Amino acid sequence: MSPKALDLDRIVKVIADEMRQRTDRGKVAHYIPELARVDPRQFGLAVIDVDGKVAAGGDADVPFSIQSISKVFTLTLALGMIGDRLWRRVGREPSGNPFNSIVQLERERGVPRNPFINAGAIAVTDVIVSGHQPRESLGEILRFMQFIADDPAIAIDQAVAASEKRTGFRNTALANYMKSFDVIENPVDFTLGVYFHHCAIAMTCRQLAMAGRYLAHGGRNPSTGLSVVSAERARRINALMLTCGHYDGSGEFAYRVGLPGKSGVGGGILAVAPGKASIAVWSPGLDEAGNSHLGRIALERLAQATGWSIFG
Ligand code: GLN
Image (cartoon, rainbow, N blue to C red):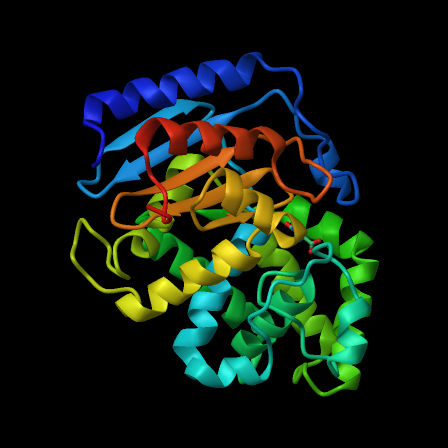
């Protein structure tokens, strides 16, 4: 049963208050210099239910770098472009390895295990780049984000993109390695340029929760009724978020939160309560696996308080 709108406001406020007082925040990502400068004391939470009612708390209107959460949306776009042929280029199995790992690529002939580890997301971005100029592909991704969030103000943080490009040696290695197996079709710097920029899209929790509505409501935008993807595709994207969305922390996230979720090293998490709500949380400090430490705890609290779980 969905909690009453009033209860949801209260639940979100109580969680935001608790999280802002905690001092066990994890560590902000340091390997992208621009992200290392973010104040770890910030916390935001936004929940949008099926009626479009928003419950928001803390820094829910402060933009942050969505990083790997963008991979959910590039996956959606690439599936829209080439459908199930995408699965020739990327797998659907959890990796059990860190998000930037290279080890499995050799055994699997350059085909990444899933679309959410860096190698897999770079392969997905390459699909979007094919047949276009990098600038057009990036424009398409950004327009899609603006469309599903219903907010034309969403933009790329160019300083974050440049910072990652300067220091992205490991992603460059992954892309070159995949290119050697012909898994990447385009010039490596084209694909990586688009990848770094879509990771650098800046959004608030409120905007991100808006963007995630189609995953919570059978592929549709619940306020317009318009279909973004088919219900079946939304279900499948949710399945991948559950099994792979938190890298080698995906099992723990499923156990504790029980909802599909996708994290980013900016400290954001998009979570989906099917049929109930789209949820975005942000706390910049990360745990060992590179997932938001307090973000996960906040979602665990929310799931407990609302009873939302895909496991009954
Ligand atoms: N842009 C980041 C990277 O490629 C994304 C990683 C993440 O958010 N987990 O390293």
